[in-house]
Length: 199
Image (cartoon, rainbow, N blue to C red):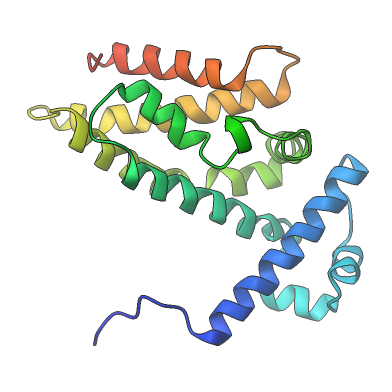
């Protein structure tokens, strides 16, 4: 049976509904400064019933997954399109900031992500992307540098880059640092790649 690449109209509409509900939840969480809003409140703001909410999300915390998935997909796409020459560190920085206007995260998005990384049940949803990201980073590295020989060296840089990225975002979101996110990413990627002998 041939693999279907395009979603059906029903699947597309369901995804649009999930994203719409997720955005309302995001707005409420940021306005409240916490994630305590009930399913009923989120559903009402999104113009759906709690039953419809639960048709799309098994648990309240899953409401953020469409936002995270869209972000992960954008990063994976940016990794696939990253240039195959030039400064690898700058290419990685460009990938992880590709969704931000002018490479900067808005105050609203920063407030939302801070809630996500500091609330355990939401943090778990944020971390779900790692498996998909590892392979996409590994593909970029295979195109850019020779990682032949030791099987560990073929995969370790990708894992370290994903973890370094998560660590930078975590630190930048939860500390009172004035350091620029782009500069932090740049520094982390240089340290990581130098540590495995890639730079």
